[in-house]
Structures are given as structure tokens and as C-alpha cells.
Image (cartoon, rainbow, N blue to C red; front, side, top):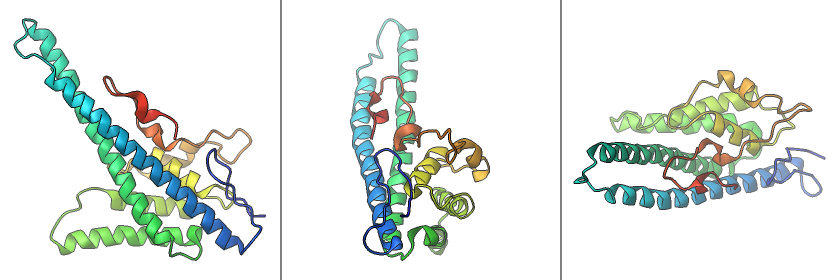
Length: 220
């Protein structure tokens, strides 16, 4: 039997038919698709929330006698929209990353072993494409991919849930402004030990905001 993990909502690899690598790949691809579907659902919910947030701005009355209250409400509601825009950008980058990564690992023979190379090639392709067009990178997705490749190569344990590991790293490091993987081991704590902390939900990065629906943090 080959175990890849048993995070809630994600399948556990148990080899009964086919080679271990084939079964492992099938489970990983299925879990990556679930992850992508979750982000697509978040995108739809964010769109609904943005509609409400913009409506809240339009509902203000600039000719109100209480100028101080208007200014405070206007500031709070515009900041809510700016916060929402940041979350929507992060969500869109997650979708782009997961879509591209899934397409590449579908062609891999051994998903886990080949992932560091695949991520490095994805990063390099983005950088080269920008430079050839005379552009600077529009985001730092390339850096996130390099950091994740490094982390998979040096931190990931064979008996871990591979997709759960990626979920943890998505929560640890944003894609729009990636952080160094230096503190990732501390972040995930005793994941492999007896006092294992639950694997973070993919939505945990998205914190509830004033005037925004709490749906963005619901279970997926």
C-alpha cells in the first residue's frame, strides 16, 4: 500500500490496481481538479460580493448634511472594494497557476518527482516570454513557482498528501507577493507528528471583510 495522505475531502492513495505511480497520479490529478473547482467557486462568489460593495458606494448621498459621516462611510466602503480587488487578484492568480500546473503534470510519469522541474520550467517560461516581448513581469507568479519547487524538493515528505502540501503553501505564501519559504516549516508545525494540525482550507487566506459577504470563507 502507498499512502499519499488523508486530508479531509481528499482521497487516500491505496494501490490495488495498476502501478503505484499510476494510482498516485490518478489521485493527485483528481485532488488538483477539486482544488481548481474550489477556486472557481470562490471567483463566482467574489463577483457577487463586488456587486454588493459597488452598490454600497452608489447608495451614499454626497449632499448629506452629516459631511463627517459621509466621508467616513465613503472611506470605509472604498477600502472594502480595494481589499476585495486584492483578494480577487490572488484568486485569479491561483486559478492561472493551478490550471497551468494541472496541464503540465497530466503529462508527467511521476507527478511528485517531476513537479520541481515542471514548476521551474513554468517560471522560466513566464520570465522569458516577458523579456522577449520587452515587458517586465506583471506579477510575481514566477517567484512563487520557484519557491514552491524548492519547498517540494527539500521539505515534502513521501508519505504526505501532495495536494494538501500545495494547499498549505498557497495559504502560507500569496501568489501576488510571494514570501520566502524560510519559515514554511515553522508555519506548518507538526504536520507529520502525532499532534497534527488540520490541513488549511484553500479559502483560509481569504479573511472576512466589513460589508462583504462571509461566503468567501465558507467550507469548500
